[in-house]
Every structure is written in C-alpha cells, then in structure tokens.
Amino acid sequence: MSRTMEQVRKLVEELKTQRDELRVKLNLARADARDEWDELERKWEHVRSRVESAGHEAGEAAHEVGEALGLVVDEIKKGYERVRRAL
Image 1 (cartoon, rainbow, N blue to C red):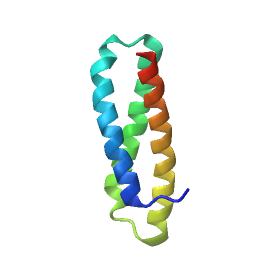
Image 2: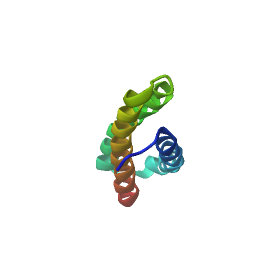
Image 3: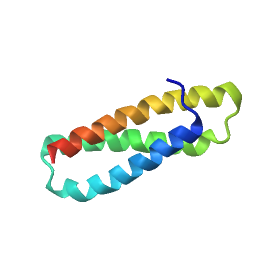
Image 4: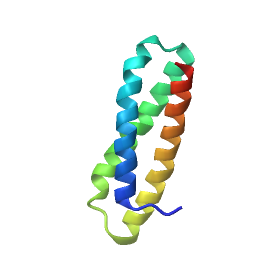
C-alpha cells in the first residue's frame, strides 16, 4: 500500500490523539502494558522526528521514507490498541 506524506501526517495526528488519551489511563496500567508503552514511546519519537525532517527530503527518497514510516505508524497503532485492551 503506497502512502503519501500527507497520509502519513494524518495518521500521525490520529496517533497523537490516541497517545494523549492512553497516557491518562496508563497510571492504572498493568506492568506488561507499561513495558509495551515504553517500547511504543521509543518508536513514536522516531516516527515523529522522521516526519518532521521528511519535508526536507525530495522525490523518491521521500516516497521511500513515507512507506517506511507508514509501516512503523501501523505498528504503533496496533500497539496502542493492545495497550488500550489491557487497560
């Protein structure tokens, strides 16, 4: 599935909303959910910084970056869903 940077940015905004909601609930989370959250936070920071810098990339490189970031965004989204179910 091919994604544009705009689609990736939209997904990142949706993830930000989920992230903010989950952060509030995490105070009550079990230890295994906390461990998964910590790993997702590491990935979130990577994606966030890459999206910010991707605007400077051009052509095919930007497309490849968008594709790779899209995969990580999907992984984070699934992880957030697992954390949500654990709460």
